[in-house]
Image: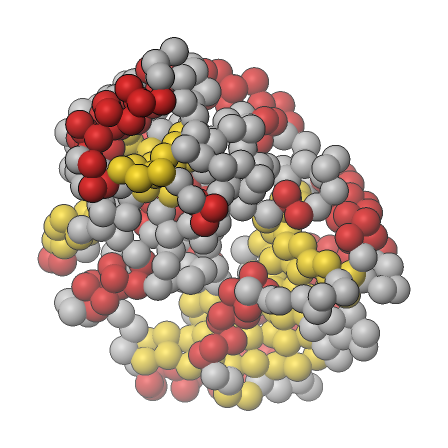
Length: 424
């Protein structure tokens, strides 16, 4: 194995000494202290630096805005941080074709500001858009309430370029440079947590900005009322762009059902009139657009010093989501509080707060309930939980295939080792 000095010299020759530095305590990944941080400025530099690390036996942690580095299981090793901070350009906005090509290190806020100049948007509501990058958002496949109407990033992406551990730059989909036969790279890379390759650029379909928007909320004191209204909205012909239910802490909980309509003022008014008729005897009132940041507020929640908090993502059938939260309420210990944001797609963000071991126990029990009914419960930041709590839960019968793909693209286990499902 090459010496640390020789590896450092090789990396410096690729990116320049000014873009290579020793990792500090702020660069820690969980309990692991990397050796170097590399910030390439081109795809070619990134691919060459990745190949250097791969050939030298170093493990690599790709990093964008560092907003979700604690998602998934803690990596088993972390020698090199490969930052996309300098790959932050919008390469092409073909506004007449409704597509945009952007580098992985570009923040979502920056991208949206550029698209808005032509009355367009990437119809995706990210956590922390001012810091979250395109590459990181794709790698985690996280999405908010707009997913209901526009789909997830896996639906919006039409092309991607990946740097593979051997130094290959492989592209697939729109704006193709080189194809990798047999793999749909855009969908394969989305949600893989950077374990297969490092995303360097992506091509998306974009949508027009709405002329107007209105957010409305309805307060229900009983889970049954919220579930009924939620089901009615799911089955209705209303053209809302997003629908969510928020459940406040479990001592006398209340349920807030919220919708957003987008379009023309006249069209929105007609939709609201139909909504009020459908909701009767409950009623909706206007709400601030900030309700759609509720999921982000759960992620940013700060617990008092004497309590412990853990975040989870629940997946269920849309019609079963609120009933699943009722099951959570039934098994929650008296001194464990929960707050939930349920999306109409059946995804939910859950914050559990209380004694660490009781929170872990509740999470384990709830995971069994969800997996028995065909759902799932994934921990977001599992290193905070007890050691035996795996972030992903039961991987199912897809694990052998996932391992085979990992071995095909990253045979040395260079990228984010151990972070993904089944220890991939």
